[in-house]
Image (tube, rainbow over all chains, first blue to last red; front, side, top):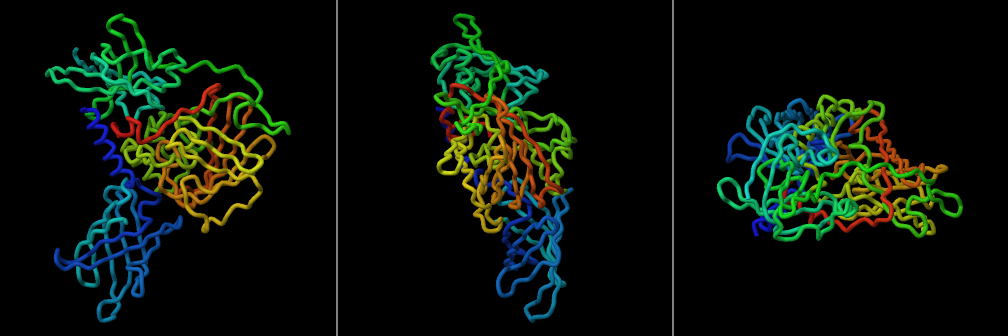
Length: 131
Length: 363
């Protein structure tokens, strides 16, 4: 009985892990989450990242108001990521966006990227999860 | 019935070499208990024992005894041990706290007879010519009227031949992590990811989660494979004993390879083959990124392009060579390979990953 319980438990664990295997370049894919200066002031963010063999390219918030990423840099020594982009604020004025974060749970399909985010002069934190 | 465990330095053995990520080679264990169940499942059979520990608690241990086909060849049948038999098992415990062990010997207590010992490598069979079709083309399957399949790869994992031999176990774990840079001409991110997978003992490996072994890894599973040459249909089917009995199609009807950007991504890719004298050359693109292409955790991207070469220098040997071209993961194309022995007069046994105790228990 115990073995059967463990066996079923293991099967459930397997099912949970089955879709969680790491794939290809660690940043490739669609990442969604939010950033904000406080826990209540949050802004939805979607990043679509791609590795072309030399550079990581990407887009922030794909759609009519999408922002191409000026630079995405991965430091594989500690799995940290730096993101640079130039967007617009609510009034349509140019604003520089920068973020620095760290990849967590690298082996997971739904790995996370979290760290600090600066949108113009506003500083906050962010958390993104790979879809 | 008592349980005792001792810590010993493991001497490398063929048996342990296949299970290093699952079992802790630095420890040995002795289990004494009564058989509660026998799981005669391909590719690894298990015997279950109720073992009383030092505190008096009865724990049901899963003892792996090896591949049923090999056990039967060695004279040990499913009926060699019966439920209720008292056994003394010497073995290697699984990593972690699980009640699982890999047997190195089993003694039947009532007779004192050693009924199991870890299998040693068999002697190489006599060299015989490769079978051929009436038109002289080499056959990749059994000779007419015979049966058989291709068994376990001779190499431990895939690595760049130009880097020389690299010591690793059957699951592709490097003996020395410092050798990682010799395994393949990695891009920096790919090397870092490979080293991460190695350092974490392959814990994120998709294969034990029953995802298909795409790429060269399909020829590394312990369950073997078969080629079905459908010459009238212009294709060769590769039937895999591992990875949930998947199959792969290699088209040999002269069709062109598709455009990489238009091919639907899959585990086994889009494969086009042709014969160059006695060598089957297969060009494959269109891979997804959901698998590890080799034991040991070699990364790849959707840009993966494989050129595989299959030849059969004699009846009992398949030579497999693969050139890996993935400019997003590697700095240049590179080539590795291994030989695979023929398993005569046998069929691949039924195996489904989800039912395999190793997948569901120890991983």
